[in-house]
Structure formats: C-alpha cells, structure tokens
Picture 1 (tube, rainbow, N blue to C red):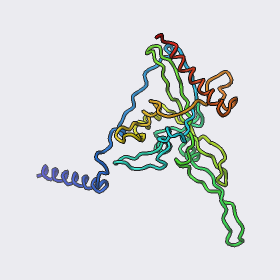
Picture 2 (cartoon, helix red, strand yellow):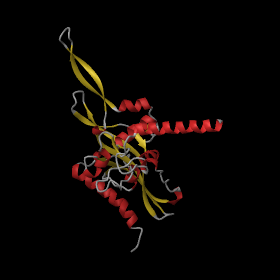
Picture 3 (cartoon, one colour):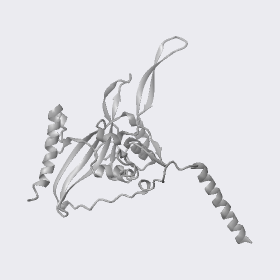
Length: 282
C-alpha cells in the first residue's frame, strides 16, 4: 500500500513538473532547441614551455566596430531571443559575466588590481547634467543623472595578444591575453568628448564564457560559431596600435598619424608574418 502511494505521489509530482514547464514554454519558436553553444566546453591551450619559444612578440590591436566585418561584435544592441536561446553582443556578454561573477574585471592591462562588482558597474554608467525648474523661484537648478552605458555606446575594443613560434610543434601561434571595451565619452551636455576604456577582461578566463554564446552568421543561421571561435579563428578586422619596443612600448599615435599610422601597423604585422615565412625553404 505504501509503495502504491509513493508511486502515485511521484506520478503527481512529475505531472506537476511537466505542467509548470508547459506553462513557461507553451510553444517552441523554431524547428529545434539550441543546445550546442550553451553546453559547449572550451578546448584548453596546448602546453607551452619557455624553452620551446624561439620567437616572441607582444602587440596591442584595435577593433573598430564601425567596420562591417566587426558588426557581429556590436549587434544586437540589446539581447534578443532566438529559438529558446538569448543572443547578445560582446558587451552584453561581458556585462552579464561581471554581474554573475563569471568574469573578473581589472583596472589595468597588467591585471594586478581586481575591481569589485560595484566598482565595475560604476564604470558602466556616466553622468549627464540636466536642469530642472524650481517651482517656487522659477530658477533652473543643475541636476546630475547617472545614465547606464549600453551596447549602443561601444565604439571599439582593444586587445592585448602574444605572438610566438613554438619550435616543439613548428607553428606560429597567437593568444589573446586581454580585452578592453572602449566607449564614446560624453560631456555633461551629451556632446562627444573622446574615447574611454571601461575595464580589462582576462581573456583566458573569458574563453569559458564566450564559448557558450553564438556569433551571428549572415550566410547560414545553422552554422554559427561561438565568440571563442570567432576570436580564435581571427574572424575580426583590426590593426596594430602598439608593440613592445625600446621606447617604453609607446603607441603608434605617438609618432605617426592618419595613413602613416596604418602603414606602420601594416609593417609591424608583415614583420611577424615574414619571420615565420623565412623559416621554411620551398
């Protein structure tokens, strides 16, 4: 008798569970449920010994999201639902990761000072000055409002990466070390003032978060890659803005401008490519 009652109780409990799930998701908005990206695991980096590194170069790159090739990092400007899956921009992924504690924000690119969640979100807002009329005197009083920074405010991303040649595997490889979102900085009146970096994200840690979010594929919605794949396969457009050098790692803007700056960035990139090319004999 107890066994029958126990089975009956479990049956009722299971039925209630199905009822709740049915109420939450009454219909499937699509032909299938996306399960690959949300449950994907990261392939770990190949172990690298210092003794096997026969060439090493650190560079800093700038990703301009105004370029069409980089629109996948910018859009959607707010999260949207697709077949039971929420597609987000890179900024929203970073913001959500900091909020949930899966990503650690850092003050600078050396990752020495961690920011608290409160400090990080303080950087994700800006002050806007408005004026309100005093109903008693008619005077205009200045009021400062904290406006949150959204994905639409992102202008660029800076990345810090290491290029090296591993003689054990005979390959030239690049690994991204850090990622910095750059936003348009506005003055109190809402006018463009310049660019401002928010905080640095340690990329080896971020890989585990980026691997669970898809990048939009304009050619085939069924063949999307994750953000981790996107960066690993170098599917973004960028240019070098800084390199390690004897002059305190100065940025290219310090001694070149406009077209000359782009040519200098190209020269540095060709130097890295030609090093690997000259190792082989055809």
